[in-house]
Amino acid sequence: MRSESYTIGKLAEFAGCSVQTIRYYEQIELMPSPQRNAGNQRVYSPEQAQRLQFICHARALGFHLDGIRKLLQLADHPNQPCATADHIAQQQLGEVEQQIQRLTALKAELQRMIEQCRGHTVSDCRVIEVLADHSKCAASDHFTSD
Amino acid sequence: MRSESYTIGKLAEFAGCSVQTIRYYEQIELMPSPQRNAGNQRVYSPEQAQRLQFICHARALGFHLDGIRKLLQLADHPNQPCATADHIAQQQLGEVEQQIQRLTALKAELQRMIEQCRGHTVSDCRVIEVLADHSKCAASDHFTSD
DNA sequence: TTAGGACCTAAAGGGGCTTGAGCTTCAAGA
DNA sequence: TCTTGAAGCTCAAGCCCCTTTAGGTCCTAA
Image (cartoon, rainbow over all chains, first blue to last red; front, top):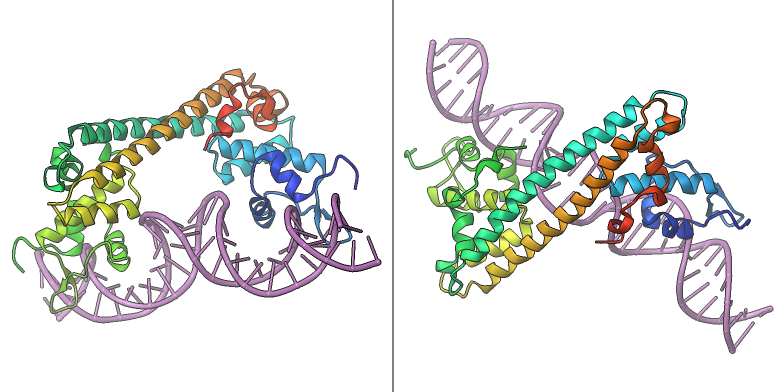
């Protein structure tokens, strides 16, 4: 086994995911089936390691596996225009921004709930009160979004 | 059928969830099995409607069903101290804050990626380049978090 | 009466893994 | 050389939180 090849464990460490996840990616054909050694264990090439790193990085950025599949196809054809990649990234950015907005609204409401908790018994606890009664929620707009 | 009772459809509308979701909550015993009318259709009381509203509101705030189950138990015992409810809400707030931090970092990276895309062919597209090479990612800290 | 909307059950699907059972292989130390 | 324990293997099921599908029954209004 040459130094520039990886066992599945080393590859997982390199790319920052779990061994099981790698096998899962192989199963759904996001990663190619690698070579095997004499004992039937997977042996990965540096190119395959790169590919997995790409996938894991994109996942960490929140891309869906579908989007990643498209990006990988693009990466395999470097002479095509990159409008599609840009589009996928833009879409991802949009989703992330929406999610941040939504979470920021939730954070405000949670904070208000917690701050107002008069804190003795459940019966005068704002946390439960607010959850029980939608109208006591100051910023109820976010329920309609998404 | 009295005016203050709900069919499952009306209840779904009232609480802001789907009919199937209500049946699912019944199945996992988050909602009680309601009475049935002569035609075996579910008939909900106002109390049950309140309970579902509580659940849906909490879900909209991102609480897990497990946490909601606990909150519901608390709500059923109004004379207990509310520390547990407060704790669950605090925990939820912490998770939301972390998520916002993570997403904000991702947003910055996505924006940088997109802005730098020189935009002609895939071979000089920063989107793909950055995804392929972790070291080209300026703020790579967030991969270790969580 | 009839159309069509709302309801029923049971089971499968989905996304993206994770866990578990029950095995084999590898690498390092005694 | 033997042993031991980590790492690997396959296949299947589980997880979260629903959603979808199939194939029916019931209700309501025209």
